Image 1: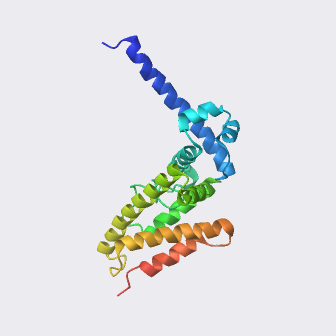
Image 2: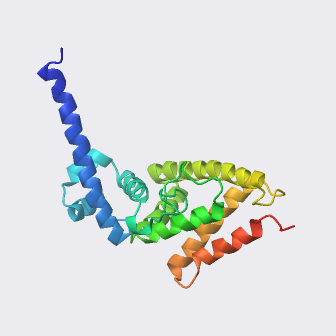
Image 3: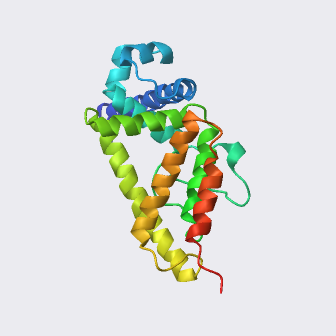
Length: 220
């Protein structure tokens, strides 16, 4: 029989989860406007409208907060970017969280293109992603490094399977290594996105479309 004492910790835990999500939702709104600008956890707490102690309790460090914000925001599809042709949010790219869910017959470059479109629907998300990659590279931010490293590894694995399926269907040339194609498409998308951040005239989507044509199986 459940006692009141046993029930109380579960209730406290549920309230803690709800409070963390409430803070995270507000933090997403803040970072959607401010992008990945680095500042102190204390300053962000003030912007979010909570105490520094509360933010530290739920997220531990600035990097952990940034990862949580990006993970949550990129896994929440924007209704305006969904169509009947693509009912599910597409992961990967600079905008989506890595993981399963890609259409195996959609080209890798198209998967990244869809993700990029969804990303740009949330102001600041692209900048936040770039900031996380930069933090992961400098070696001083373990939470960002672990997240970005795992994200790339998962995305490469999923996209490699996607390339193999396309090669088997005859839609993609078979004289290329699937794992290298996956790494190349990810690199092309992220590189084009970085250039777009610096110069909006760079056509991210057209660049990925060109890569699709280069990888397509030759017509007989």
